[in-house]
Length: 334
Image: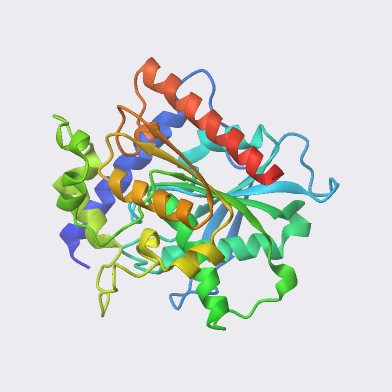
């Protein structure tokens, strides 16, 4: 690995962790930390290792005293271009979900460039299967599962299910059907849906983004180049970026119909360079019969809710996260 490239990754990781910590600490209401951390061995990936899943429990939760069929579970995937970010970055949103009675499992999947494509997707699917296998001991109802994520985390919500579908179809995944749960819905915040487009093409697709005088940090060359390269770092063969594990918005119709849940909600950013590909995915999924809800928050850019600084932006963030949590509650009740 190039020392300069790794130094870039290290600096960006350090800064994003600092900003995320400050965000969690700021304000009168600080979200609680995880109640349980479980280290899960990777099973699906050829790159052996392990990763952590952080569990957050709702009021009244007790593993030793089952409650009916168990609590609904939300599997959360953090953002960060596959190379930065952490499972605790979404604790504000997680607090909204636990307050509504869900167990939340936030996945600290292995990151690139140390663990390039497709490790993050395999870890995400491993986490889902682990939770379903251990549903009884975790006191959760595996048939009330919802996947959520922002940016590449939203991408993982789609691609982990597409990988599950394909591996079962290809008979590459031997699993007892009784261990399978039911995904009721997906909540995707500004997800990556089409990796065939360059950054320049994505920027050109949204005039509102082009008109920004100050572009978000993730779109600038120093950070953007790291995000673009890290996930495919030193792969012997470059993958087809149009394949459904990389561009779920371009996936074949049969895979989208069969792999994805009936309800999918998108929370998009009006100033995001990804907006065009996200809207196209919304259109396709709607035509395929999925119940798709799409809300565009105008005047904000990619990852805006993790970088709210002013009282007005924090109020907008809290309103958006609260509404998303309400919609997830409706998903698991459907």
